[in-house]
Length: 426
Image (cartoon, rainbow, N blue to C red; front, side, top):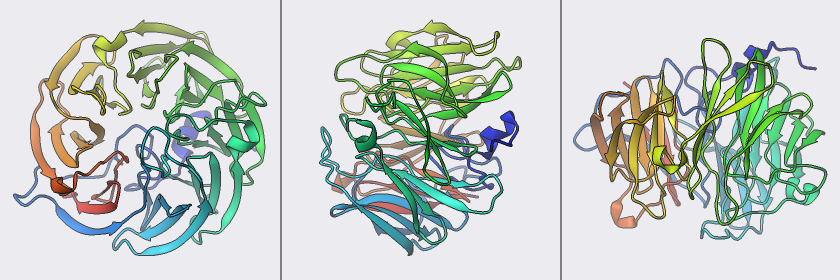
């Protein structure tokens, strides 16, 4: 059943082509666009060119892109809708609705939170779309037709709770297994592995409650691991059987969340390090893995003085991380650059605003929650701003929490009511 070599698995997770943005945080879940993507050096005076826009329902789920098709996951009236659209025009191709009664919890928004996952099987014979709704409904649709292939009401089956904001950890596909941070209190279903083709439950693992952090895949010691930041721990899972390889405490009890994804930091020794961060007094941690195989050392814990970001995942370039520090709901916030060894910041740009980051080559994009797009150089020596533009009318008080996507020079970004696509490629 599992035929790919271990290192190849991390790249086969989505079988993405150059220019695709098939899942949360891009082709490799690290906030970095495909290597052949280009971006403008600055914006014209009137701002970047708007290609098209369309209305959308509620939710914080960004879009996923493969080829000429995008996938939108949003709430329309009393349904969570998975919808395919043409990336050149925004015109719908197909849609599939599932009833929902989600009320939003602390947030007024009542839509889905998780970015869709577009995945091809290991032989490239079929492409499918996986979505994880706010009430834990896991669905698999055919990418070409929208036909519902299978579904699992995970919260009902495994006894999971909606949490503060509903289910918000985007599942991951590695090889033939789809893994989700379900957070079930029955059957040790903190993390559940499904056969991605049939939806069959392959294994359940741990008693960990769900977080809002999405897992990543990383090659460590010659094998591919699934790395999770759960409600109260950071841990590694073997994809084939759900075996817990290592775990360390991370997070805090009470009204807290962990939202940023782990960041993989490769090393020449193939040992590997992982960077975890959260706000609410948690701070940051570096975990070094191996040797010996399957063991880890909690290398460093730099509380909030290094980085404590609410949900924005740091983005790496070589030996440095770029990150937005602070909380969207409280402030103040700052943009930081620091070395991967956890030492002090190289530079700090105060009062930057909160938002999310992505990188195209050596250019960083910061999408602020108030609708402003900022381009700056991925330069560890100093903050160098290249351009900025308001993508949404500030008079409408836009709220941009959905993660943007970048594919074939097009920038896809949505607020609570509208999806816009801008031409940013050279």
